[in-house]
Image 1 (cartoon, rainbow, N blue to C red):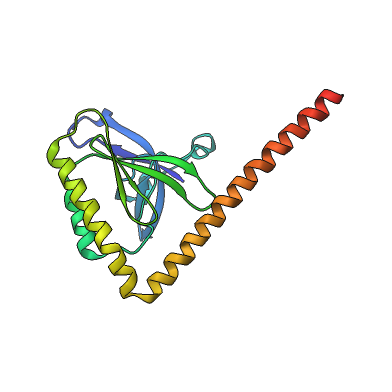
Image 2 (cartoon, rainbow, N blue to C red):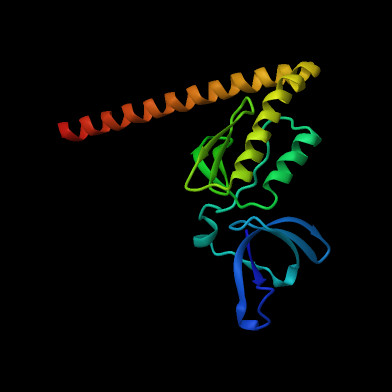
Length: 197
């Protein structure tokens, strides 16, 4: 982890340069490709401009996370998703942290869109929502519902992988539940021991 300078393009003043936490993705000679871990954007920067990140700052959790679709998505599906989300704010909220992944909720312009394992989208309206956005998201939802069975039926390996992934997710959830129960038992046992003393 390093600290890299970031200058606001709108201001020409040298005092507007700030330093932000970054992760080095690749190095090509004297140029480093970095990701700003609290914002998610990437850029190329000279190696000499990077500073060592203090341990007190590097131990803090990253505020930006890389998100990818869990299942195969066709080029047409991706184009439709990109088209409908390109001009809107996308906010991702981490609902649960697992050992190897996060459970997230995606918000697109005040609309909560949950991408579940079977790739259906559930829409929840918040405040007032532009009717066009609502219709676009409903259309995307319908498209995904219709194309998912086709994708799975056409490719046998997708069907097998889909079932395996589903079972692994179920096992992971059971493991998390058992871990939580064990933690609760341990906590109660510690409390009993402390009360006996």
